[in-house]
Image (cartoon, rainbow, N blue to C red):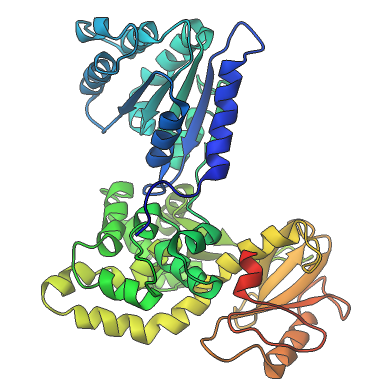
Length: 468
């Protein structure tokens, strides 16, 4: 189990940078605001808490909970009163009839002679009240921005957080925006002590979500971690998925059905509709748009010099992909004494599922190398290619842009347990080079193999190469 706060160096450095702008202002408006967004369980609140502790300045942390606006305002004033800010005492006696009043009282508590940090967490709950955004903009412009304060706005509803700071909304242009991503596969390797091969497998199971990664015991294998997770219905591995579904889609039954269909590896519009039992195209389109808008589902299109729009859908979060494939009913089965069904399901499907789930992870890692690398050809985009029928797929396509003007490489991903990339795989890859629009016989070939391999004319990368 991981002790203390690990990772997030880049995110902490970004927050420190903005705080330094408050410490050393270049105008008579020292106040700065930053809006942090990211899916639930990704560690936003923990990151901000660590940042505030390290900063060592007066602070206030308020967590909205989705209550009625008048209750949220009352809770905010109670939080201000208990914060220890210089002007906090008056908030305990204040009565707020509007967000303008509540935020003004908050501003009056902020010190004028030293730097402070104000955190409004899950602020996307508050944006549903029509009066909140205008009041936030007004109090920021007239009071908070004139003070040496860093205002940190945090939210899990990513689409709503993007709207909060978008053009045409009251707070537009007043904050720096940043998306907090899950921990990287490199972070997972560091925190679990696993080698690169096992660390990528661990990333597929945990999705880089801090509550899962920090639960990893020293020396624990991926198989042992999964076995522990399915031994009880209250494990973080089992309950996190249902909590995420309930919080993201409390009443949208069809969206959940569509998500579960994609979780069974249904990838095309037609197949998803059939598996989810949604007959109306317009209705299915709305559900897919909702899932994509909330960053739960990703949409991929073939990458080549010939634009193509036969889309494929996938679960964006590796952990949620794992949970939907294997653990969606695990709690009930474990409580019924049939955890063995879950264990056998994972044992049967793990190899095939892993081979597909690792593909977007490898593409991301390869893209990071391709930005500036002597081994992987320089590429601004790394994707895949498939034909309209879906019976021909090329795992890796590098390009200069999307849509591509030139294809920089094509490649294959082989994530087998023991068999390395061999001459048969190489022959298939060479044949695919003649299929992808924009590729020709001079296009470099790359293989990414879990167990390595060596074939003349093909650059082979291992998990250790991907994680650097």
